[in-house]
Length: 584
Ligand SMILES: Cc1cc2nc3c(=O)[nH]c(=O)nc-3n(C[C@H](O)[C@H](O)[C@H](O)COP(=O)(O)OP(=O)(O)OC[C@H]3O[C@@H](n4cnc5c(N)ncnc54)[C@H](O)[C@@H]3O)c2cc1C
Image (cartoon, rainbow, N blue to C red; front, top):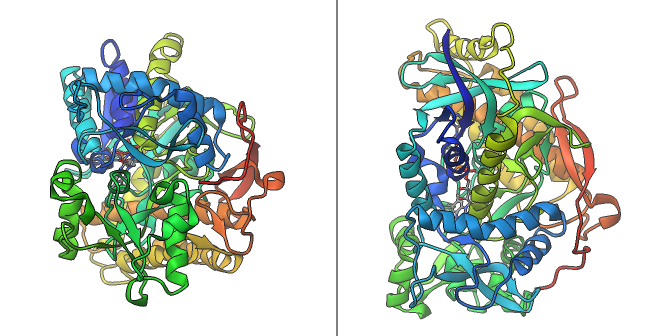
């Protein structure tokens, strides 16, 4: 057995994982496991910015930011967590600045800030400049800065290791099992502490802004080991993905003044959201677009509308939006200096995930029982600061605030009293058997039998788009539950072609596909049971919010037998802001 022992094992080298590692590296043995080379993590694709009420451009307060976060999340946000997020955002951003992150600057040398959807001054009066940014490559800069610092601090990286399983023994998380992609060997990591920072699962939908690696591995592995998944039905579609490809055009464009136009050249957002216009929250703008399309005002009667930046002028476009305008040129052959860019909503962000408390500790049930030694942070986690809908630039700040808090809690509170729990017998048995049985399906005798993984993947992505997208109803969700159950079966017998143990990317993709199906199951089950419309979860058969019955978090527990997860519920933490109707 390939055996490794560390005080802390962090799975994921995106913003959340690296931020946790940064708190621990000085006097603890820390390993970071990543299926990608760290700087290829999806955090590097984040464009627009990171929210913090620094007040560098105009008056701002963390309390206003907290209010916007709670209201933006359609009141499904745990308000104790939102307070932590918005207060600590300020210090966390200064940490990044001190580590060398090259933010854009104001004339007097402070961190520059721009507008983003749903961020307002004085509890909703109008847009405020709150998002700190480095052109339209903020995430790239965050990742590069923190990776350099982690290398400097001697964090041990296991790159291109695919985590397959979580080990729990004596009521404590005590390790993970991973596949080394380079040579196909299985490795057991024994640890006092495990941190999951494995990101989201946008690849479950056909049109998505998410990178190929966003396959919900951490969520699926936890779910299989009895940890519930929280509020998975809350999945955000970003309004402005490039038509047909889904690649994101950051909300920064609208923050800088871009318009959305229908086939009549009308700025339709003004009609739906007179105060915030194009800067209403994403769930709403996505629905505005879908409504325009449904009512026949898409461009040429098709399923897209225009994003126009031309009126901003070349100079501003080049200075503030260089990358995303290049995407439009390269992928659609459109010149944004003069032409509007075809866009449609694209699957973007998981508000739900592995439930945690405000220290990043993983929660096992509706009574908030923690699993000792187990932490989660970033998009894989649900703390829940985003509730039913995340505001733009509130994810990067979630990574750095809660990645930092998890790391600090581990260092100050957990490690001083923790010990290694013994590994369970044959710790790598489950993972080894899965890998061997998949490889056996590629072996000579089995070759060519069964359908390809590509067929199953397409079916998952198309059906999720059709049945669990921006607009949902009982009929489509019921059909999708059956589809997911069917896909699970088909996954068991699909065909593999590659028997190699050296960089077998087919094997990796098949495992990832299995994880996506698990995430889809929890998403659809939660969506079917939530008979109301709230935030990103819009049910055409229940078009209003129902606080009486559904002001609560869904917890989905995987069930081996029932074919559908068991759903339980827990209350939302409300401290200051009572639920109100959302108007923008
Ligand atoms: C195109 C795009 C633009 C965005 N722009 C913004 C923005 O401007 N502002 C904002 O706030 N948010 C933005 N977001 C959202 C935000 O970027 C993400 O939510 C966030 O970066 C997720 O970070 P993370 O650290 O949780 O995970 P990621 O950065 O996705 O990293 C996941 C890590 O986990 C590892 N991993 C995953 N599975 C395994 C496994 N099985 N074994 C081993 N390792 C594994 C990966 O290798 C990777 O290192 C954007 C998202 C996208 C897709």
